[in-house]
Image (cartoon, rainbow, N blue to C red; front, side, top):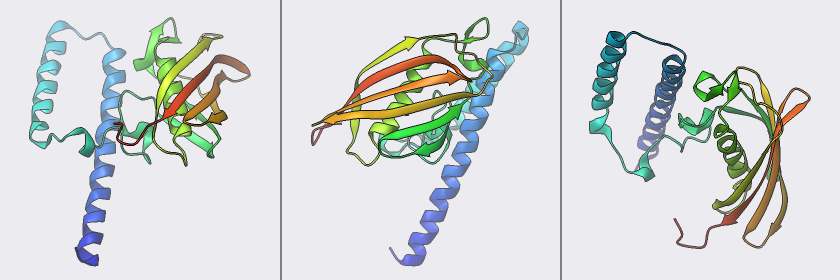
Length: 199
């Protein structure tokens, strides 16, 4: 491939990636809208039909996991994966990370509190990215979460993560999630570096 062809391909890839992130952003908005409304039956059924039609428009562009953009765009919020809450990393090194996030109506459990299952997802996203910074690929071996307070939706939350130690292929990570001065959850996890040939 010539340098001009490579540059054109790179630009096309960037445009595709950015456009896909707009699609994911719209999907996140849809998730919140669906969660926070109570449409009459005829409206719900009509929109369901529209969404099926939209989904079918994407059928011809199906790719394998290695080529999909969702979950692979590291420079975009949530890696362009709609199930992952958007994390804003304000500081990142190989051993420590800090940042903020805000959970939305889509993440609601009940009474203004985030669904308990969202919290491990948040920590796994934070820890997985941290454990893999300047290190070989790794996977979660265990993740333990202590719920300290109610985790609210619609408020800015602060997160931290720290690599406590590395023992061979084992990476031990701890972190916290806070609402202002109140720590709402703490977690510790073990990540294991993959052996050669492991998927």
